[in-house]
Length: 211
Ligand SMILES: C[S@@+](CC[C@H](N)C(=O)[O-])C[C@H]1O[C@@H](n2cnc3c(N)ncnc32)[C@H](O)[C@@H]1O
Image (cartoon, rainbow, N blue to C red; front, side, top):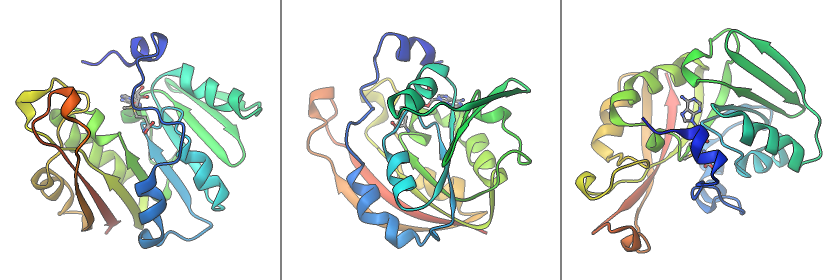
């Protein structure tokens, strides 16, 4: 099991980006989320993309296991959040952001009902064995008709000990198709991952609609 606390403490956070995700900027308009949407960002880290959602007029609910990135997120923006502890979780809020610190699987539907969601480096951070439960949580924490954007990463699984764990198209189809409509918006062959020892790797961008 990945020690995420250790990763944040030792700053082994190679996934964190200092710029907005270009695939988010390109594809979010196709997702069709209303400006008033509350956007769920599971496994959010301290992603800058949450600022982009705020600029679009959305409110943001991030879910993050480790307290360090949550506290950094508010501090780096000069925000002083209200802090409320409940049932193994800590809710930090400073409008338009609510970040819930704790295990995503402990979050209850009564606490979060999002209109939209964004998954970048979230589902691929979880091993295959946890993904059915993850998709179940997404379904539980979003409203019927909620729209989502999922960015995947896939590679020959024996070539890397994740995270990120390979998430092939077939697995996306298998896990989502029962309760979500899905449409692949783009498939990309990645050229810059050979340094990690991957002979080939791809990303796919999906639009999802929760039925
Ligand atoms: C690879 S990082 C991606 C962060 C963010 N999505 C981004 O793009 O910068 C995955 C994050 O998920 C968090 N995480 C892992 N397991 C989790 C869980 N069960 N519940 C909530 N967060 C979790 C980790 O602490 C880490 O910050």
